[in-house]
Image (cartoon, rainbow, N blue to C red):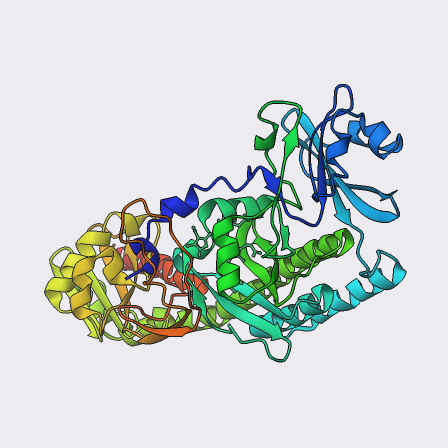
Length: 500
Ligand code: BLA
């Protein structure tokens, strides 16, 4: 069973995290009416620094240069501005538009590497470490190390979304004394839907101190506290998530989005046992390194696909050379079924054409084969049917999961369509979850969903799944069906010509 199904996801998914009405404790926020340049709202440390600025113009509060800067802001996305000094403290500034207002955020200028030549040199060196990785697993390990150097967090993980939006830790680097989450799985509800959507837009978040009280937004305009903080770097985070981190024994967290082809592929997740903030420059450096990581991931996936394609193509001729006479399904596949199954790494191969049926290797019984063929007849004519968890799509398949947990099917458009099916046996898998994902489900309807109390490794046996079909294998099956059809019709033409 999919643990995410058992949960009341909506409670988590509905929390409007982009309008929290407050910011984290370590910075300040000003809301400006761009028309007259007046400050209409603020939030910040209880010392009142920014609250006293409400009603002033931005120039009065922070100096004249800022006025021009906010007039030139783009419609979307934050822009770093020149830092300011107030009462001996230095602040990094960030500005963005939010509805009719402009938001200015003040992040404490930290004693972390400034954006100078040495810092840029270091960035290049870190980027080079990513490029040097020889394989995808190697890249994941290197990436965790690189982000640990950049952020100084004690445990850095590369977290990858897998099926059902659940995910697993695929790379890790940690300081002595920090426990491991390597290869641990986490359910989808740990990062709810709206958070995943927001993280495509705003790619770096820092939770500097999971114990610090939040700073509410106040102002001179009614409803100003409900301002949209999607682009914020100081936004206070969901209390449920803070609870989650505290349960994990984490004092501060940071995460960066890994976006591949416009979608959230995964996150760089950083934990620290004590409070830890990141400077604006470090945050921006993290973002650019995460983009670089995404490119490296894509490059490596493309290389794997390309190599597999070459290997599969070399195999095609063997299959085509063994095709038998096509008057009968049996004869057509008698010699070619073995290489056909081998081509895509299947345990069995079967074909159904009208009332005729052929099977070879390890396949479900004839009645089941006909049932499966009926199920995919329409859809597989357009795109291949691909599943590595057949019983999830066709529940009856649970009865023969030992031979067919995975199925790949393509329809060959012969006069009477031929449905070709490749099968893969069940591959028992033990998945280690970070804490029991089935527990902590609220028993009272409408009750608040609490994060897990324990993240201790919890093993779950997964039934009914096969090794997944790769993109190259699916592609090879479709291609081969086309080639077989061509071979068949050119043979027919030759035969007709001979008869004439
Ligand atoms: C946010 N959950 C997050 C974030 C991460 C995780 C990385 C982004 C914020 C951050 O950087 O800390 C989860 N952290 C993980 C995972 C790993 C990790 C999977 O280190 C693995 C290595 N959380 C729950 C439940 C709810 C929930 C039951 O467990 C729902 C009520 C909610 N998680 C939740 C919310 C956010 C979140 C609402 C958004 C926080 C925000 O940005 O405001």
